[in-house]
View (cartoon, one colour):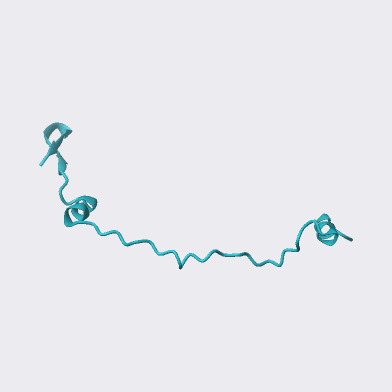
Length: 63
């Protein structure tokens, strides 16, 4: 019994799918490496952030 897909391929309206998928070459496009300064790295890691703790009465206080 023929399927609709095989009839379309037989009539030449569509190319037969072989199961292989074309993959783009992603290795050829190299991104330039981003250089971060020491201050930017410390900001990302949270080194220079304020520290908050609970004080008397349950309120948050900056230390």
